[in-house]
Image (tube, rainbow, N blue to C red; front, top):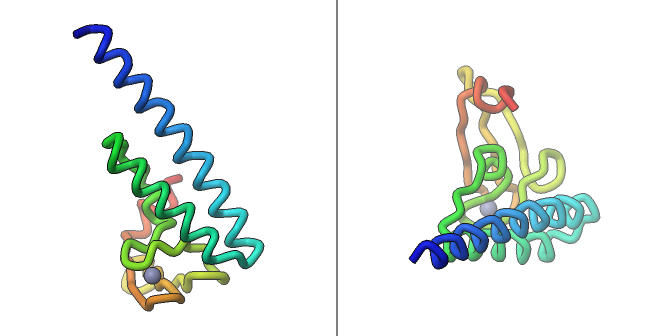
Length: 108
Ligand SMILES: [Zn+2]
């Protein structure tokens, strides 16, 4: 039993590392205007996080459009605006909005 739990934790650790790598790859792809490629990475990120029950960090969640899985980079795939003390991030691909309190965005 103990052995099994250890294995599980190890798998989770690997999953987290993979997610980090995929995030940086998606970031790079988006900056190179390879948006479809970036979306494939985001798909993988979400699959891994579901499979291993790894929660994404807040700053990682900000980067993903939940609707179409676009990797959001302001000026590339997203528009960022301030509205009534909140940050509004609009996905340029599907037009989906995300809203966050400013505090959380700048606390990173
Ligand atoms: Zn979208």
